[in-house]
Image 1 (cartoon, one colour):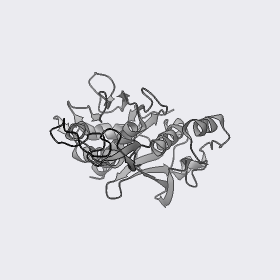
Image 2 (image 1 turned 120 degrees about the vertical axis):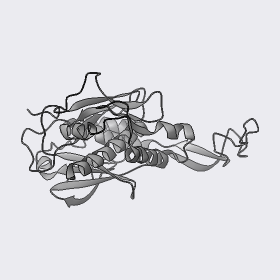
Image 3 (image 1 turned 90 degrees about the vertical axis):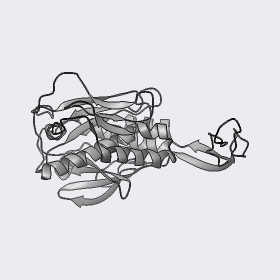
Image 4 (image 1 turned 135 degrees about the vertical axis):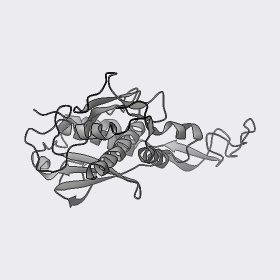
Length: 293
């Protein structure tokens, strides 16, 4: 069987990000969909996730809205690919309840700003609503179980696979983990940068995604949302957390004719995971542009 580390493989799925619509897009080749094993709603994997996370629905087929609470919305076909649009959820919600920290005043006289940190000076209680974020993560975890490795029968796409990844979904430490492989075309693009590099567009995408989920972000969190290469052949994606990042595994000198595996560190929440996926999608977009030149 071919692997992304050793071979350039026709693209069986892809991810992309639209900054204009703030939407993550998943594209799955029609040849692959025809052989996709449909996991039924009564499967224990599905029923246990529905019970644990309180989902209301599950879309079984890639021919329609797919996944837990049908968060992968079926769009139009595009050059032999079925397109699914994934909206970024708003996690931090301002309610009409009084902030229990400042009793609704919005003030904190102990701070230089004078504003309550918990309600950001609004006097209103903020709640974190994770359900949709978990539904997206859970759907990716189910989907990537089948799509992580190249299919035995190659699809008819003329495009190369850029990367592949898989995810986990559970509540607690490392519950949003993500890992995968950067394909040879990705690594050829990455190796074209010979100095330390800050990747502006992917960093901007991750910042927008994080802001969409949590609203206003402070300067410290903003500084942590970045995609950088500290040495030739390497790349790191950083998001707020306890040294939370995605990185290329190993310290050996990379070979240009090989793909490179990547892993993550301390990815605990679906928000961190989704931010990484959107960053990877933006990187994939950059590679596609590079290959067209």
